[in-house]
Length: 243
Image 1 (cartoon, rainbow, N blue to C red):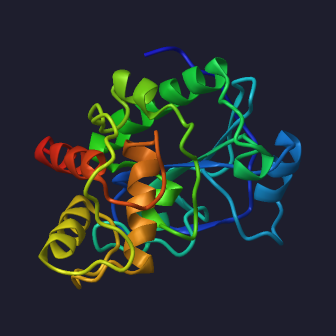
Image 2 (tube, one colour; image 1 turned 60 degrees about the vertical axis):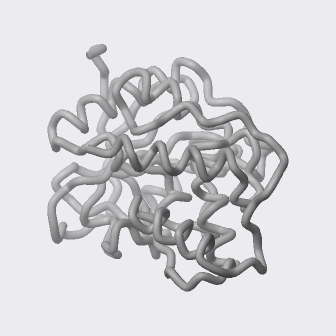
């Protein structure tokens, strides 16, 4: 594991934890200026924070102690658990995000993220399949860290759960307005992996948002909320490789 220097920059925005730490949750700041984003996370009026902040140049700051409950996930759910803040370590990655054209994440920033994440996973025994993006735990409400986030680079370093997505082929797909057993099976599989989705058999807006969130993380070549063959196959193989 690469030696990492972490600077303290305390935020007042935290509380008491309730529950074990078993999720690593990754965000982008979505603001054009690193220092502005950092100031917001440390402003008591914002009521938001994270445990760590990574500048574009790779500098790492700790805002909240890992034993405390930082306020980064908001209204979220994963695998039936709604208090994601209590169960997670949150990392804010300085990036302008979709409002700024979703710029690439610099290599030095990702290197720092990998090193920081490896230490967190080791300290808390967080399993690979519980390294998540904000969009995973809040589909439709959040879309960070975005479809250009290099999940594959993290997974290659032992951070996160990933399979190689199948090539996209146009053909039969499930989409908004569809219903029936195939939709029910899709919803059930997404729920089994951890996504917040009701198994109704109706492909409504919520299902579309969850499919898009899944694609954004695991099949980012096309993020459209349509469950095509590539999306379905990637989901099935991902579920099959869970411990």
